[in-house]
Length: 180
Image 1 (spheres, rainbow, N blue to C red):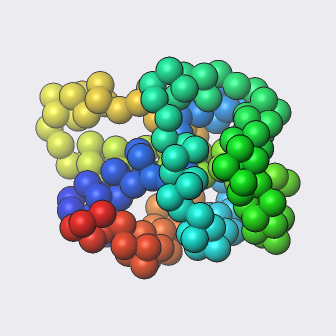
Image 2: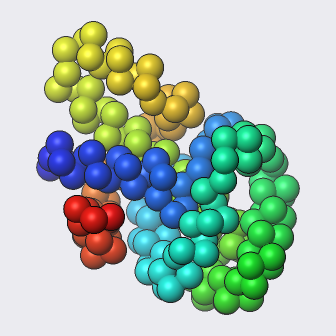
Image 3: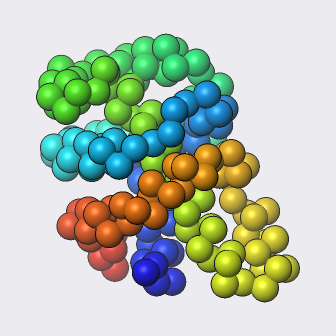
Protein backbone atom coordinates (compact mmCIF):
# COMPACT_ATOMS: atom_id res chain seq x y z
CA UNK A 1 0.00 0.00 0.00
CA UNK A 2 1.19 3.49 -0.80
CA UNK A 3 1.62 5.78 2.21
CA UNK A 4 1.39 9.55 2.06
CA UNK A 5 5.06 10.00 2.97
CA UNK A 6 6.23 7.50 0.38
CA UNK A 7 3.88 9.01 -2.19
CA UNK A 8 5.25 12.49 -1.57
CA UNK A 9 8.84 11.43 -1.92
CA UNK A 10 8.29 8.99 -4.76
CA UNK A 11 6.13 11.59 -6.52
CA UNK A 12 9.13 13.92 -6.31
CA UNK A 13 11.27 11.17 -7.80
CA UNK A 14 8.80 10.63 -10.61
CA UNK A 15 8.64 14.35 -11.36
CA UNK A 16 12.30 15.32 -11.20
CA UNK A 17 14.14 12.01 -10.99
CA UNK A 18 17.23 11.39 -13.00
CA UNK A 19 15.40 9.96 -15.97
CA UNK A 20 12.08 11.72 -15.92
CA UNK A 21 10.99 14.31 -18.47
CA UNK A 22 7.54 15.05 -19.84
CA UNK A 23 6.87 13.22 -23.10
CA UNK A 24 3.35 14.25 -23.96
CA UNK A 25 2.08 12.80 -27.20
CA UNK A 26 4.57 9.93 -27.31
CA UNK A 27 2.33 8.04 -24.89
CA UNK A 28 -0.60 7.98 -27.26
CA UNK A 29 1.19 5.99 -29.95
CA UNK A 30 3.26 3.71 -27.73
CA UNK A 31 2.47 0.13 -26.82
CA UNK A 32 1.55 -0.57 -23.21
CA UNK A 33 4.30 -0.95 -20.68
CA UNK A 34 5.01 -4.50 -19.62
CA UNK A 35 6.11 -5.95 -16.29
CA UNK A 36 9.43 -7.03 -17.79
CA UNK A 37 10.05 -3.51 -19.10
CA UNK A 38 9.81 -2.14 -15.56
CA UNK A 39 12.29 -4.74 -14.26
CA UNK A 40 14.67 -4.16 -17.15
CA UNK A 41 14.51 -0.38 -16.70
CA UNK A 42 15.20 -0.67 -12.97
CA UNK A 43 18.12 -3.06 -13.54
CA UNK A 44 19.59 -0.71 -16.14
CA UNK A 45 19.14 2.28 -13.82
CA UNK A 46 21.18 0.54 -11.12
CA UNK A 47 24.00 -0.05 -13.61
CA UNK A 48 23.89 3.61 -14.68
CA UNK A 49 24.02 4.92 -11.10
CA UNK A 50 27.78 5.73 -11.29
CA UNK A 51 26.92 8.25 -14.04
CA UNK A 52 23.97 9.73 -12.11
CA UNK A 53 25.19 13.27 -11.54
CA UNK A 54 26.30 13.76 -15.13
CA UNK A 55 23.04 12.29 -16.42
CA UNK A 56 21.03 14.57 -14.13
CA UNK A 57 22.79 17.54 -15.70
CA UNK A 58 21.81 16.37 -19.17
CA UNK A 59 18.18 15.70 -18.37
CA UNK A 60 17.32 18.51 -15.95
CA UNK A 61 17.31 21.45 -18.28
CA UNK A 62 15.46 24.75 -18.02
CA UNK A 63 11.81 25.15 -19.01
CA UNK A 64 12.65 26.18 -22.57
CA UNK A 65 14.66 23.00 -23.09
CA UNK A 66 11.88 20.89 -21.53
CA UNK A 67 9.44 22.24 -24.09
CA UNK A 68 11.91 21.39 -26.84
CA UNK A 69 12.26 17.82 -25.53
CA UNK A 70 8.51 17.26 -25.45
CA UNK A 71 8.00 18.22 -29.08
CA UNK A 72 10.70 15.99 -30.54
CA UNK A 73 9.91 12.91 -32.57
CA UNK A 74 11.30 9.65 -31.26
CA UNK A 75 14.21 9.73 -33.74
CA UNK A 76 15.03 13.37 -32.94
CA UNK A 77 14.89 12.65 -29.22
CA UNK A 78 17.22 9.66 -29.56
CA UNK A 79 19.66 11.81 -31.58
CA UNK A 80 19.52 14.58 -28.99
CA UNK A 81 20.25 12.17 -26.13
CA UNK A 82 23.16 10.72 -28.12
CA UNK A 83 24.57 14.20 -28.82
CA UNK A 84 24.26 15.27 -25.19
CA UNK A 85 25.88 12.07 -23.92
CA UNK A 86 28.72 12.49 -26.42
CA UNK A 87 29.19 16.11 -25.34
CA UNK A 88 29.93 15.00 -21.77
CA UNK A 89 31.94 11.95 -22.85
CA UNK A 90 29.45 9.36 -21.60
CA UNK A 91 27.90 7.99 -24.77
CA UNK A 92 30.07 4.88 -25.09
CA UNK A 93 29.67 3.95 -21.41
CA UNK A 94 25.91 4.52 -21.35
CA UNK A 95 25.41 2.79 -24.70
CA UNK A 96 27.33 -0.24 -23.46
CA UNK A 97 25.07 -0.54 -20.39
CA UNK A 98 21.81 0.06 -22.25
CA UNK A 99 22.81 -2.38 -24.99
CA UNK A 100 23.59 -5.06 -22.42
CA UNK A 101 19.99 -4.75 -21.20
CA UNK A 102 18.59 -4.91 -24.76
CA UNK A 103 17.61 -1.26 -25.23
CA UNK A 104 17.87 -0.19 -28.86
CA UNK A 105 19.72 2.98 -27.78
CA UNK A 106 20.30 5.17 -24.74
CA UNK A 107 17.45 7.35 -26.03
CA UNK A 108 15.09 4.37 -25.93
CA UNK A 109 16.04 3.73 -22.31
CA UNK A 110 15.57 7.39 -21.31
CA UNK A 111 12.28 7.75 -23.16
CA UNK A 112 11.00 4.61 -21.42
CA UNK A 113 12.07 6.12 -18.10
CA UNK A 114 10.04 9.22 -18.85
CA UNK A 115 7.05 7.06 -19.60
CA UNK A 116 7.50 5.11 -16.36
CA UNK A 117 7.77 8.42 -14.48
CA UNK A 118 4.50 9.66 -15.95
CA UNK A 119 2.80 6.34 -15.21
CA UNK A 120 4.02 6.60 -11.61
CA UNK A 121 2.58 10.11 -11.36
CA UNK A 122 -0.73 8.85 -12.76
CA UNK A 123 -0.75 5.95 -10.31
CA UNK A 124 -0.07 8.26 -7.35
CA UNK A 125 -2.72 10.68 -8.53
CA UNK A 126 -5.29 7.90 -8.92
CA UNK A 127 -4.55 6.54 -5.44
CA UNK A 128 -4.55 9.95 -3.78
CA UNK A 129 -7.65 11.24 -5.58
CA UNK A 130 -9.62 8.16 -4.57
CA UNK A 131 -9.24 9.23 -0.93
CA UNK A 132 -9.85 12.97 -1.41
CA UNK A 133 -13.02 15.01 -1.44
CA UNK A 134 -13.94 15.99 -5.02
CA UNK A 135 -12.79 19.61 -4.67
CA UNK A 136 -9.33 18.54 -3.46
CA UNK A 137 -9.11 15.94 -6.23
CA UNK A 138 -9.91 18.68 -8.76
CA UNK A 139 -7.15 20.88 -7.31
CA UNK A 140 -4.66 18.03 -7.58
CA UNK A 141 -5.74 17.35 -11.16
CA UNK A 142 -5.09 21.02 -12.02
CA UNK A 143 -1.62 20.77 -10.46
CA UNK A 144 -0.58 17.69 -12.45
CA UNK A 145 1.15 17.83 -15.79
CA UNK A 146 -1.51 17.47 -18.50
CA UNK A 147 0.41 14.50 -19.94
CA UNK A 148 -0.48 12.53 -16.80
CA UNK A 149 -4.08 12.46 -18.01
CA UNK A 150 -2.93 10.80 -21.24
CA UNK A 151 -1.27 7.84 -19.50
CA UNK A 152 -3.02 4.63 -20.58
CA UNK A 153 -4.74 2.68 -17.80
CA UNK A 154 -2.69 -0.35 -18.80
CA UNK A 155 0.51 1.56 -17.93
CA UNK A 156 -0.92 2.62 -14.56
CA UNK A 157 -1.89 -0.98 -13.83
CA UNK A 158 1.66 -2.14 -14.64
CA UNK A 159 2.99 0.36 -12.10
CA UNK A 160 0.49 -0.87 -9.52
CA UNK A 161 1.44 -4.53 -10.08
CA UNK A 162 5.13 -3.67 -9.80
CA UNK A 163 4.86 -1.14 -7.00
CA UNK A 164 6.70 -3.26 -4.42
CA UNK A 165 9.63 -3.71 -6.81
CA UNK A 166 9.66 -0.01 -7.71
CA UNK A 167 9.49 1.03 -4.05
CA UNK A 168 12.35 -1.35 -3.18
CA UNK A 169 14.41 0.29 -5.95
CA UNK A 170 13.55 3.79 -4.70
CA UNK A 171 14.51 2.84 -1.15
CA UNK A 172 17.73 1.08 -2.22
CA UNK A 173 18.82 4.14 -4.18
CA UNK A 174 18.24 6.36 -1.14
CA UNK A 175 15.54 8.46 -2.78
CA UNK A 176 13.45 8.27 0.40
CA UNK A 177 16.27 9.50 2.63
CA UNK A 178 15.64 12.87 4.24
CA UNK A 179 18.79 14.36 2.71
CA UNK A 180 17.91 13.42 -0.88
